[in-house]
Image 1 (spheres, rainbow, N blue to C red):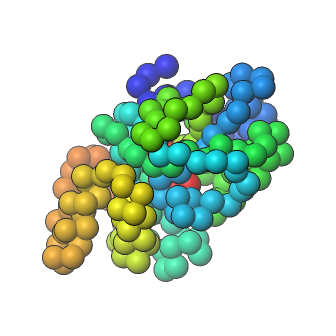
Image 2 (cartoon, helix red, strand yellow):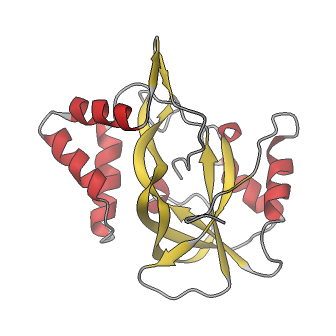
Image 3 (tube, helix red, strand yellow):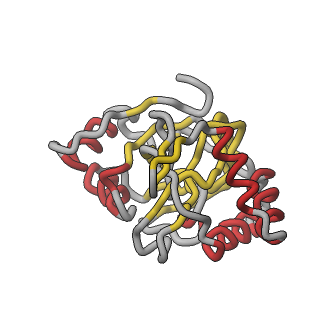
Length: 214
């Protein structure tokens, strides 16, 4: 497995969520506890039962405004955080109270568009606590790029990261650009780095899987 984990599970629109989660569940060792890596709104609002949590990091990815959401979470539609290829992303790991198939599927369904996501198994690095016999996952999404940032949502993520003493230099730089009214310059540079192709009202990137907002 590559740095940060890169084991992708193909989506199946015909078979639906439970079939995909059943395939995904087979990747984990029987009897081993499972955790969810959160790096955006799940850091302050987990929508599942968990037994404990700890700060952790994933190598090979970074938090990025790379996902377009038209769901209620963004209200109005706006750019949201996903995890793009990069150096390192710090977040929170929640140890799940249950790792049964139905429970994993329910976590998937808490996202505003579960059909867009694919679960991925991750390698993590604990920041503040040792962990044993745990396997961690997040969800991977096909990228959609469009619109402009949701300022209130971004500030909430940034404030949570600051409160948890996590590090994200790129987000800090973006906040400086946002406060200065220059987020458009940041976005143009982001488009250049990610080879985004504008197509009318929407924008798309090369076929590459991203970990979405969780």
